[in-house]
Every structure is written in structure tokens, then in C-alpha cells.
Image 1 (cartoon, one colour):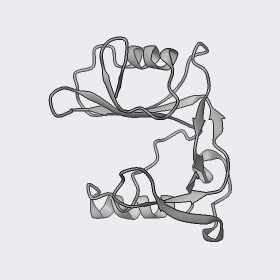
Image 2 (cartoon, one colour):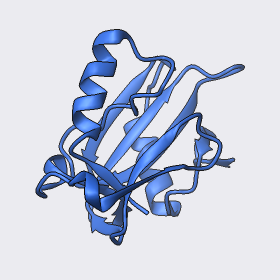
Image 3 (cartoon, helix red, strand yellow):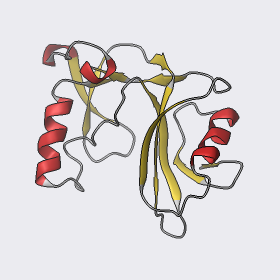
Image 4 (spheres, one colour):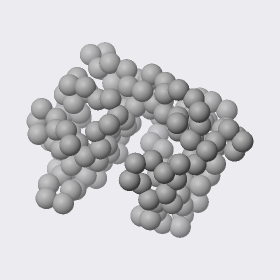
Length: 147
């Protein structure tokens, strides 16, 4: 696990963040009370591009057809992700998800995106309500992540 210069723990740190990104995250979380936060923000000039795996309408693309995708379980996730054989793309937006941790507030993840809104969790996520599953299923029927 990585930490920001101000000591915020970053639990999921495999999205190519460098020290400039970590300093930027600290500015975003200045005065943070540890409550749940999900932000989509434009990065400042001093931050290098991040790479985005998202494909589909939210990223400015056509819907991703089922014939183009494969389903694979990524890492230690509980279900498969909809993947497409395309490259990651540079982007200037960052998604930051942070909130309560076991012992102290943590940053769950931070990653690059072209989208203006955060993507919903995947439909198999156990924490989703029935309404959220409907939204997630509709979103992920048109979107995929770079394999």
C-alpha cells in the first residue's frame, strides 16, 4: 500500500500514480473528515496523464458490442469484468474514492478516466442495492475495460 505525502493510505495503488498525483490527492483531501468521498476531477498541469481503461459512451465511444468482449476476473475481485482487447488511453481526469477504513480513513482507489462521472460498480458487487444493480447492469452492457 502506498501513502500520500500527508500520510493518507492508498489501498489500491496499481493505477500508475506518481508523486505529483499523490500531492494532488492531498490537496483534494485537505481538511477531509474521513467521510465517504467519490470525486471526478481534472488534474492540474503538473500531474502527468493517467491511463484510462474505460471504453464506451461515457468515454466518448460507441457502445461496446458483446462480440468484442471477454469476461475475466481481475485480481482478487469476486466476479468477472467485461473486457475489450484495446489499449489503455491517456486522460486528464482522475477518479478518487475515499472513506472510512478499518482503523482510519483511507483512499480506496484513484485512477484515470475520460468520463465526467464515476463508473458504477460492476453488477456482481454484493454491496449494490437492487436499484443500483439495474443501473450498473445497464452501464456495463455498453462499456468495457481495456484488457
